[in-house]
Picture 1 (tube, rainbow, N blue to C red):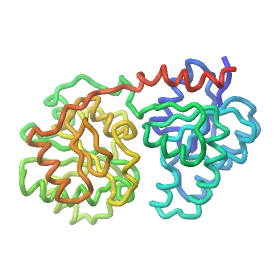
Picture 2: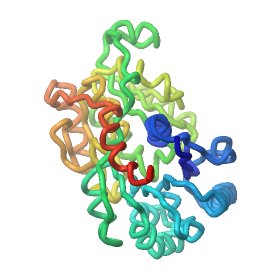
Picture 3: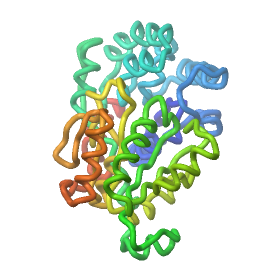
Picture 4: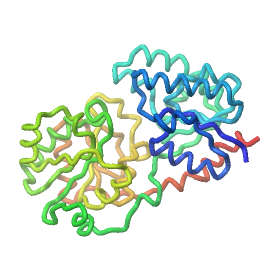
Length: 341
């Protein structure tokens, strides 16, 4: 069995975890030890820069097939003559520009053409992102590998039992948002809070739970208290393995992107949040995503998002089709077979 060097500074991200799990069927997957211990989000911090540099050194000294996380395109100069698959799972340049990292975006734009041309294959969560990758260079072999959850993420539990275990009220309509690290910059927390004020006016018995880093919401203790009076509750960050029971407890699940974010790249195939909701066949309302048949889609105007949530609570959202990560395995085998020779 051939070794495969898995290059990602964020190896604890579910997509990376699932890729490693799947690739272990055909490769002896090797990850730099530091990346396992210090995995973090892409940022301009010294630790992130150090991790990226160490990834580059690992790529330079290990002459074996590789997987390159597309966010780590900055190490491409270390990968001359390397044999690798490039995972273009984020529209890196538009995101960096949106986050205000203009010099870093310029570097990424300069490096992406070589990385794409040099790769044996490109994988990406959806066709729109693959199309974006093709704007930098002609694609080699390319494959769509959506961000679906593992089949085992699903738990068979009733709403009533899930709420009992979480000590949630049985007599309320519960809306759930599972947030990420950048609640304000990317995940539209201000939009959701503003929309919920209008939802609460129309649906005073509904309750919204927002899971995620409470300290990044930017509200005072008194503001949190005022929102609690409007049935908006912040339980804080929940470990990923505990998310399933929260989804099982909900009547409606929501997600949104911050106004102005490059939304055309994102849909249920890219967003792990949406596909995790769909795994439980929960009705979904999504603001700032590409339109899709599995959810109510609105733009990022407060009144339209609020209207969509109310419609969802009234039973107007479609029933999403569940998908599992395991569906990707045949595609992954094709994408990585070029690294076997």
